[in-house]
Image (cartoon, rainbow, N blue to C red; front, top):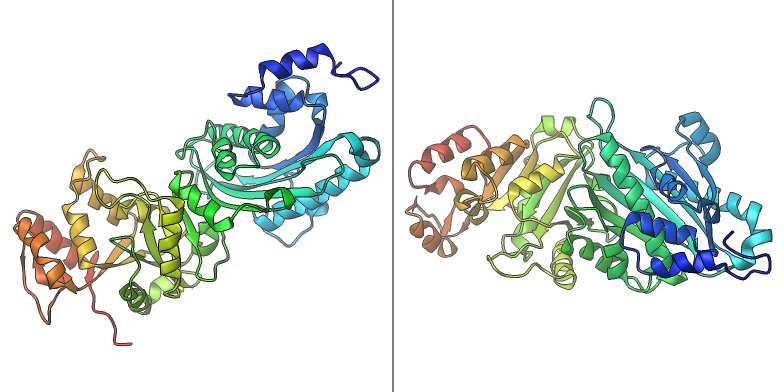
Length: 455
């Protein structure tokens, strides 16, 4: 028994509460929720097993927390419960699940327990790794919860990408994430930084990436959506987050899915009018077959929160937002990456589209890519370039003012010519033997010397 009939808490409860007042792992977090007599709720999980509910069922004292668990794997069953007409792994579906399960929970329990209970409803819909391993592994999680008995509900909905290579590992990651979310909602909502830190506890970016969070409710109204999303990338909880031109935040997959994509990296992480012109030119130059195989096209400025100079700190969330707003003033969306290597950017976007990814870059960016020593790769330069172009990437290279390039080229013993004060991709000759590789990349169409169209 956790409590006496007159409502007094038993010594058994207090002994456990004191010992886990500061939970340090998933087991202790789940148990601390189970031992809190005020917290009670339901679980509805689709895909990746019932890993979140299982944590609360196996740590003990589950009757103190779990009102119901359900798994509507069959599509007809899911449609009957939550309505048809939406994708099964989508924000619309997880929102429908929240509404249905919350109404059901209150209709059964509010009359008898509402005055003494902070109810919650946890739902998820997930596409974990399938048998053939060819699906997009991601999911949506939703949590509706009260901060006080009979209080108004608050919602947190988040999208994440599963990066483990096996289905079992992905299931385990989802279980940890769910426990983290429920525990953080009841203990960490007064600090967005602490909430995000707890959300990712025991989960590295190599296992789960968080790229979208949405919320509503009085308990969370002090949070800023754009600051939260900038924090996701600054704290490396995501590989990339997107800030669309219209300001409406969505996961990258929603914007990039099956699109022909043009990315314009800002070398100094500062947006300039030239970036907007390069995006327009590259979009207008996309091959017809790329467009025919895609669901439209999109051009984005891309920035990195990594330092441009070795030894400098990463950009803060506030600094990221300054650069994002500058980019949006050009009329384009901004994709912010944690890392600055082009091959990492290309690999990320290629998760969501089969069309070639076109980088619209200034010559200075190309030179940086060719001069990088790629210390984090065993194959150094060859492996870095191999990864970049293996990922279905093309570089549309625009001229750069000669004054900005001469010293850098001379320091590497490169030769160049200039016309009208600019140097283009066809005007440089890297030092041997790199020049052989460079000419091959140009001749094979991986590197495309490009001029800004007259607009």
